[in-house]
Every structure is written in C-alpha cells, then in structure tokens.
Image (cartoon, rainbow, N blue to C red):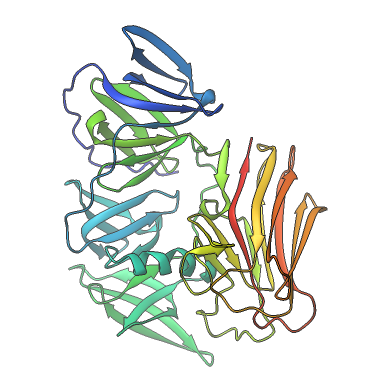
Length: 402
C-alpha cells in the first residue's frame, strides 16, 4: 500500500493543557483540561488532580464548537477512507489531484484516493443531495452536472486531467459505442468515482473534527507538544494543534447511526426503474424522500434513512454491537399508500419485522433488537405486493450500539 503524506498542519506551541469535555460510554460528562491524547488513553486535569481514562470507555472528547466557514465558495472532497476535506480550489492533473485546504496547506494526492468531489459545497441543499446521490450510484462513477436547479448524473468512466488542471476526460458508452467526453473542471457540479478500497487498510480508531469543518478518519494518534499527529486508515498523516480541534469522536464500534455507516452490499430495484437512468433513488440519508427533514409523529429527526422498496442494505457489524434501535414509520410529509414492510436479519436469521400501512392511525413504531454477536445485519424494505408506488419507510434515529 502506498503511504500518502500530507504537508503537516503546523503544530503551535500551546499551554500544556486545553479545556475539554469527555463523554463516557456510561453517559457521564467529564469536564477538565486535556493534557494528552493517545491511541489508548486520555489524560486530563480536574480540580488540580491529573486523571487518566482508557479510550475504550470514551465516546467523544469535545474541545470547542467548529468555526463557520467564512469562505463564500468552497468544494468538498471525500477520500475512500471516509476523510472529508474542505478546499478553496482543486485541480486534477493527469492522475493526481491538488487541493488548497480551507485551513491553508496545499496537498497533492493520487486520484485513486478520492471517492467523490462536490463543488459549491457551501450550499446546504447541495450537501443534502450529495449524501444520497453518492450511495445511490452504487459502485458506478461519472460526472454530476447542474442546469438551473436540476442536478443530474452522467454515467461515465472517469479519466485523467490535462497538464494544466483545467479539463477532465471521460469515456461514455451509448448503444454499444464509446466516445470520449471532455469537461471543464470548474463548471462540473461534482465527480463520483468507483470504490477503490484497500483490504489492508488499518481499522478506524476515531474521527477527528477540526474547527474548519474537515473530518479526518484516524487509525493512529500520537501525542505531540501542544497537539497530536494522526494517521488515517489510508496512510495519510496530519498534524493538529489542540486549538484546531473541535472533537475527537470514538463512537464508531460503540454507537453508530446507520446513515453514517457504509453498507457492504446494496440491492435496490423497482420494477419501474430503468437501468440507464442513475437518478432513480431508493436510499436517502438523513432526509425523507422529498429531501426534507425526517419527521414522524410531529418529531423531527436529524439522523436516519428513508427507503423505497425494493431495497436491501447489508452492514458488516463484525459482532461489535449489542443492540439495534430505530423508529420505523411513514414520514409525516411524504404521501403514502398501501402497506410497506421492514425485515431485519442478522446472519440470515430474521430478528424482527415491522409492517406500516398508510391507513394505520399511528403510522410509526419503535423497534429494538438484540444484535449481540451478529456479523452481518441486513435491512430489507419491500411492498406488500408487486405494486410499490407510494411505498416508503423512514428509519429515524436508526443506530447500533454496545
């Protein structure tokens, strides 16, 4: 595996400790001055006493609220290991991409490290659309373009950038004939690349949120004077001063929302779908089918999935969790008819079933399932017959936890 190295963000010389709040697995909030953070423990001062807490007991460490981006225009680049970087400018030259980070440094990566790229990411509607667009493309790749208010995906095999970083080429196949298309890098809405996962990448230890809005997946964290040096699962290295940190999130493997997990297998197909049209969605992350907030019984939920039949999502839990919970129902603000069925399986054994009908007086039900030792969790949403128009289910606040 090729090791990617970023230009490290300079570590400032800061006071020995910085204020923070630690949330434990038991739900206890501990305030203190953070002295040192490593792979295995966090050291902090509380009331003049130095204390140590093992990382296996920590859900997250909050340092400060992230700064609101003051840049009027920026792009969002996601790497295959899940790292998300906000940039003021990017250019693809041949098979490399150069990124001007909001935080200052300019970095260059092989294009194979990039999962997707969204321009004009300062627009919340663009970000909301992008969450669901990327998962619904399901292993395919292509350009994403915007004309007026309409966003569309053009399936293509993405190629190289030119020497100046102004044009990117792609191959498009229609009716058995392949043609080369060239597009300006500055005018496209976004790019989505096929998955390029290295089976030998290191497991994720935590997620680092910095004050500029970057989200960095962390496999290793080493304490430095005034901050930390981290390595991502893909081998990318960063240095952060404590004053640049907003949060260290250790919830993965302890408490994870399904909308933040990447399913290992997706099967989604309606009998009305056309294979040549990539903008037929069955999966919506953190929104309802109308791209509005998930709403059940008058309550708005910020995390969850909205699913249209027929849809199967398989998650590799690896036996790390004990419980699956969700509020399952028909969204208050999405029209529905007939009956929709949710089936939850663990290692090919049915764990639970929920049926919701548009005629039900109460159109949502809580679901709690034991998933202890489950390796593969499969979520299936289907109609009660062949007719699946106007069927859907929200899985609000859907999560797995220890």
